[in-house]
Length: 155
Image 1 (cartoon, rainbow, N blue to C red):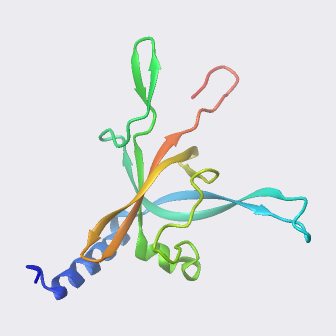
Image 2 (cartoon, one colour; image 1 turned 180 degrees about the vertical axis):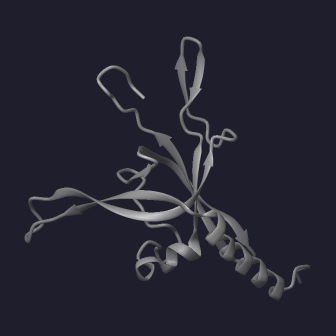
Image 3 (tube, rainbow, N blue to C red; image 1 turned 90 degrees about the vertical axis):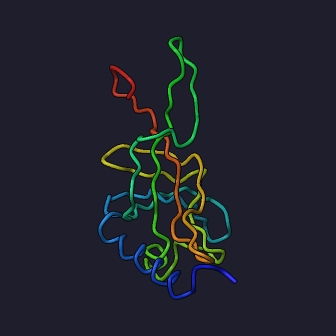
């Protein structure tokens, strides 16, 4: 017998999902990668579809996932951005096509990318987060900024 009654869990979940309309408003372009096969499963080609989703970004306010690149002067952390996605919001997009049967965000961490404010990021880890009794409320993705060559320097 739990201390928190089901009606309070239900209210908590409702409040968290309502909060999405206030805080989860950063536009993110999900560069979803898929393979397109020919009629006889030959001549496959890789395509990217741009899907606009809304999320909450944790901009480098703490070290979220250590990926250290050794430099002469020490270590540089290149993976400190986290993208939080509301699972109820994702279930409501495109008739639930972005969530699989197990309740996980349906993306390919090996090939998909995310574009935020014109900068492209690669996913380097993900997990479900913020469970309310038996309901997973969020999915978060650790993002690594991709290096971009401009001709003079790398950003």
